[in-house]
Length: 474
Image (tube, rainbow, N blue to C red; front, side, top):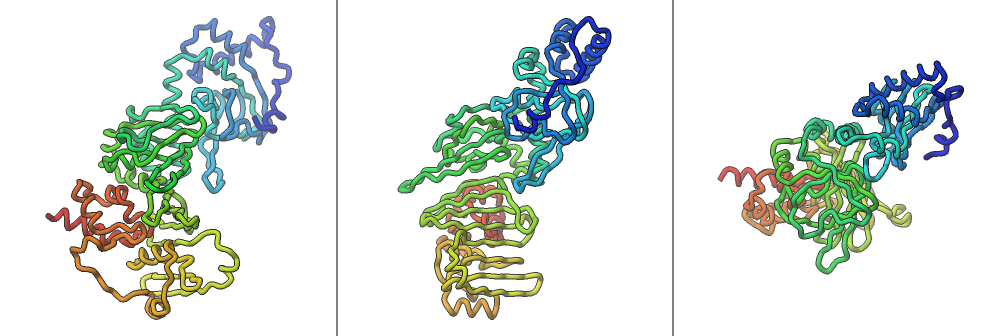
């Protein structure tokens, strides 16, 4: 527990628990009434309730004291006797988000006593001088019954989705969808436990409540590619959506708690809910690249707007990052960790067109280092591919861009050419997309999840939708 917590923690002055005092008999009766208001110990008879009251510790905390810190291991919970408490969490950028304000008779911190990790899921601060009753982990377990435990676990699930909804706008439309879903069950994994293995049947989807999960993908002739997912992330959905076996192995890094949903139920929700389809696109996904590396996606921001972000880790050790705003034609991609000797010798070209079209590209010796685009740009995928591959633009291409905002004159391949690359960023061909469509993937989201087409810059989406429309018209 943090130093500030220890510094301000002490017994209430002049409060004695001697039964002979008339004042204390009255105080004990008021505390018993307070406990009855919480409904945590409704199953106790009067004798056991009085026993519990005498074992609890009353504490006073000055205003602004941090009673509970998110991420720490909890050893007790608190019942508020007097004052107000603030419950809050943080966004990834560090911004504080208020979750609740608690008043007399409410309790907090109990979730750390019933989850297997013992981890605090939010922070709690005194808004005023407060008096609380402290219930230790041992005491809580001793007097808690199974019915109340089940109820608290249900509350914990609700709090998880409420917290995710506060942290990520994309969760807001699915919070109610999952709150009362009885198929969504908690599961606990110890450090090093394998949740599922690469190649196994995709029989469930998982939401991480607490802890960290490592996903490792083995590809022939390559070292394993590894990524770590934290609380709030969804994993295991790709195999369920595409009806394929597990693409990687999931392992608990430390103690982990998840919510597990059967594949059949997730398929139903995925088919009926646009919100859950958007969530699966926004969560981290890991895709092997044909240039012998991996691309990882996650939900982030660009220019203050929610965005699908990507990190490219290429086999040569280089790294690139990309962000595409959700519901806006705004995209940015850049190489990372460039030396100053390169940055000092760059050339930047800009183009401003009609209908809010804006393009800005930085080159070094003809190689693209970063690119920003606002508005529709069919060539964007090819530009991204050049940046990732390190292929230089020649003088003619650069001059063409300077004059027209385009690098190449239109030169479409025949419509039926299966070798035509539709998604330049992920190098997905027309033939691969047609094969996926023929296997039963007849909407853009499922096709994108399976092939990774359209997951980076998005410039290929019109072509993919055209393929789907042609298939659906048959």
